[in-house]
Amino acid sequence: MQTLVTGIGAITSIGNSVSENLQSLLDCHSGIAPMQILQTVHEVPAGEIKLTNSQLAERAGLPTDGVYSRTMLLGLIAAREAMSDAGIDPALMRVGLISATSVGGMDLSEKHFAQIREGKGRARYMLEHDCGASTEHIANRLGIRQFTTTVSTACSSSANAIMLADRLLRHHLLDAVVVGGVDPLCRFTINGFSSLMILDKERCRPFDASRAGLNLGEGAGYLVLQRDDTPAAHTYCQLKGYANANDAHHQTATSEQGTGPCLAMSRALMKAEMKPDDIDYINVHGTGTFNNDQSEGNALCHVFGDKVPRFSSTKVYTGHTLGACGGIEAVFCVLSLINDVIFPTFNFSHQMENSPLIPETKVVKGAHLHNVMSNAFGFGGNVSSIILGL
Image (cartoon, rainbow, N blue to C red; front, side, top):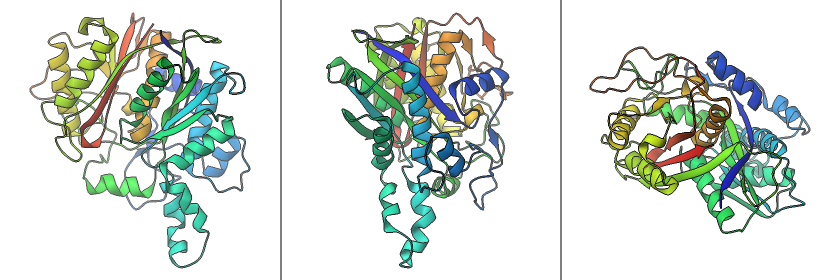
């Protein structure tokens, strides 16, 4: 059995749809800029979607005076686009939804908590805080009732959701799965990452010697996965391999040697029954923090030796979207495959010390891509790699 990608949907700081994202990727247009929607005391750039919740609600076809978490709104927009693209109908086949998030409805609960603490406001808003709340709302509005669940494993959440979707399909428990992830910007994440002192006050520079931290971002990215024995309007590519590992090195950092990332990439290759030479391009996790890029770089050299495939980090476009990054970057990998193009780390300038690695710095068209890998590494050393191929 083969697992096919039959639909994609995305909303990020560089585009409100897949087509808009693709154009920005080709134009090397970054969405990282001063924040306008989220009010915060921190003066740091971020990959913010320049739409208010009311504007997002209108785009999602919901009453603009309703109270929604930004997580639900972004997720609904991207998941609906993926579902429409695939042309699947939950009334005619067994469709599931697996949505990943790390923020959940925190943006809504932090907005109303002060009032609720004083005995004012509506306590029901706090119910949206749970990570699963947005998933349930998205499923209900898409008519998905066969299977719904939420994955929250920090920044590897969406990649792990994709793995679960594949297993459900291979066990014939579902015919199609809408799978991916969503995370919004909120004060809690801005404050939290600021306390870790890993936010760059300029645009992030993954794998660059001058890297000084990450830029946070927000967005949602979803795929539709189907078994090859179910009717599909079209097929983009296949999910060929994946793996999850954990080096349990630190609460937030991966090991300097990249033990967990090595396991994830190696085991993904094993599951795909591929050799390292079979990978044509890697969309690396590439956050721009000192630890991540060092760890991932060491792992790339360990797995691929002196023949590391062409690679880039697309977080220079969107910022780090946390639990959504695996879904968004999987969509970008699909776009790379079907358009035979590599989207670059366009602001790279200085090679890391004691490292042979240099990412692609310009758009590469006619890249001859057949198999691509996408890495998503999370706090606590929870790391995942997936492989997509034609």
